[in-house]
Image (cartoon, rainbow, N blue to C red):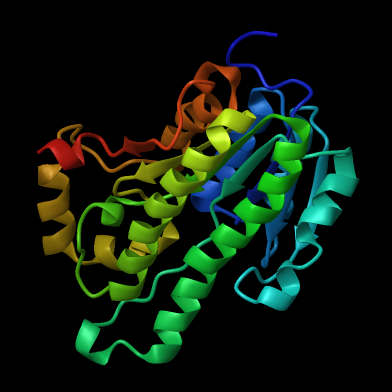
Length: 250
């Protein structure tokens, strides 16, 4: 098997109904992985695209922001294809309100899904991977892992924390054959950024700062996710890979 090939591997990917999650799941399938997809909303289009590639798929519907619905997700995923080789913690939400008016309900909802669920799935899948002596965990961070953002205090806090969890788990699990890393997407053309892109002044100011000269697309994450999921990254631990068109170095 080639360095970047994933034949015989199973990936558990959350938040696959569209956007970045759909693209990453399809990218992993294109490299040969079978996919266990977890989503609260309909993911049939994603599943069809994966099956078209000749890969096996299984779908688990769950509201990952609710702890009671998390129980059983990992065991169902393991049961589907006999094990989990790759975990991609992609599911997340954002709530845009000024910090002074940011409701406790919004804060809690964002932290529950973007942080607590990420740790829970890392922990549950990590135990399984440690027992097997190998595995790849990829968390999805953000440019707001490094910056403060505007009107998104909960999201910023959660994405800073994702980097911390990634590094902490990498310290503990690298010696056990489990690589834990993260991807920090830049400004991407997805539903999460629709509000920003609708503001022409802000859209232009952001676009002018990106050295690549364009916003990213979900497909821009296919290569990075395959790299971190494959044996090509066996000596990469606790790294946050920025896929941002050069935004952070401007």
